[in-house]
Amino acid sequence: MTTDVVSSMRPLRADAVRNREKILAAAATVFANRGLDATLDEIALEAGVGVGTVYRRFPDKDVLVAALFENSIDEIATLALSAYESENSWEGLVWFMREALSRQCSNKGLRDVVISTTYAEQSKDSAKSRISPALQKLIERAQHDGYLRTDVVEADFPIMEMMISSLGCVTSQLAPDLWRRYLTIMLDGLVVSRDAPTQLEGFPNGDLVAEALRASSRHARRSEGSKELLRDDCQGS
Image (spheres, rainbow, N blue to C red):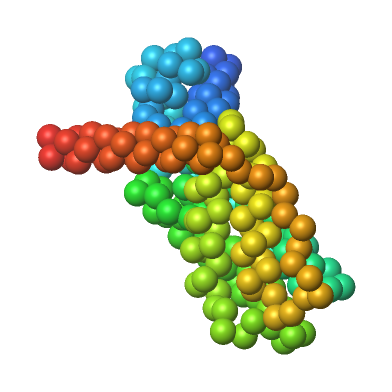
């Protein structure tokens, strides 16, 4: 048996276990607030450990993301399966969308994994392979029952999720439930018929809209800056 194999089988020391838990807790906080563009240096600072300690436990960001979001991805897939058990197929689909978006709008990192990111491609593919089949069943059932318009396809839903969760993330501090208003507008456009428009939640004023746009612009600049750093690191290696 080689030294490397023996080393990989050796249990972590108590201090190493504590550091790993501190890093995961810090990553959960940092990614939730800033998305996956956050750096390992930022996570080390939040955890109160050296960046070298982070790299020893997690050689790159993809490994950290996979360890952190595995359970969250399973939870969303389970939500879709639970929604399929609903007696009313339209209510099941609506419930799933609200529950899934509630999690994504309060956690930028999870949103990045589920919707789109330049990092953690393997985690994103894993999420898609588990969530998409369950979502497809919800869609087909609601269409078969005459609730969901038949010209909607499964690929439309990630786009709608991206639109709503983007709003939810940039307004999470200003108006954490504002995204529900726009989800309701979308749902009214998806259902085949209803007696009257659904009552809307919340009401955006001019100041809120202006601040949301500024927040979105700041996030875009931060994301572009992180991509520049990633390109520089790749070119320098």
